[in-house]
Image 1 (tube, rainbow, N blue to C red):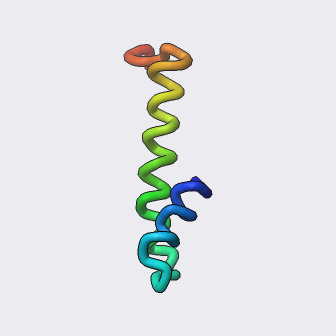
Image 2 (cartoon, one colour):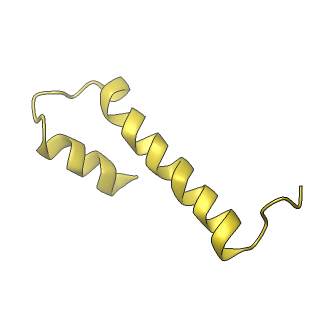
Length: 47
């Protein structure tokens, strides 16, 4: 999440609104959790 926020601040450095930089950070975390559950732990379709 921190890496995504840092990348966001590099591109438009004048935007410091949390609503702007947390959107891509949340999407990154969501994808990371999905990857861990499905690909690493093998939990796909077992709920």
